[in-house]
Length: 166
Ligand code: FES
Image (cartoon, rainbow, N blue to C red; front, side, top):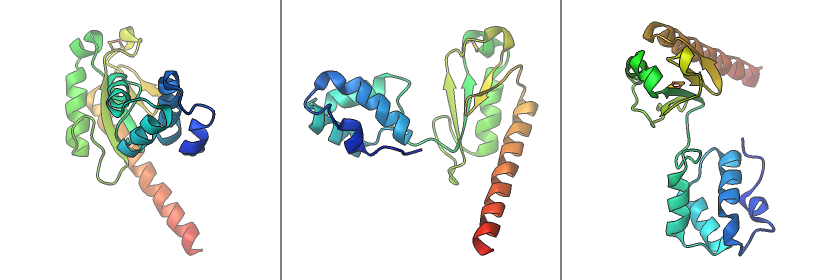
């Protein structure tokens, strides 16, 4: 994911506090999350108090303060999805993977998140996996999706190991 260094992101923006959101957007895009060390560097470089950098980074849902899993399962918990059983989907994913929402599995392969509405209410309940939409989800369908993704990850790892040994 990382294609630019923090120095490259900050280039031409130092001592410009009004660039804070743009810089944080680029950091998020580049690293997948905004670490505490990065916030300190951004604070120092732009001349914005660290507390303000943290306030902005933690306010917007688009910014993550921790790394996510390789596969991000996002449950829509908006009203339309909620009344159609979204809570059961969260329970399915968190129990099957052994994590709470917002956490990453120990192997780093999955994280479970929720949002308030994905804008496709008539098709709910909706789950997304790394941007792919799954509509009219049920706990059974979600269990199979997680199993499929897990098998794919295991196969990819085995293939990678074979290539290393060859
Ligand atoms: S409430 Fe789930 S898509 Fe709108």
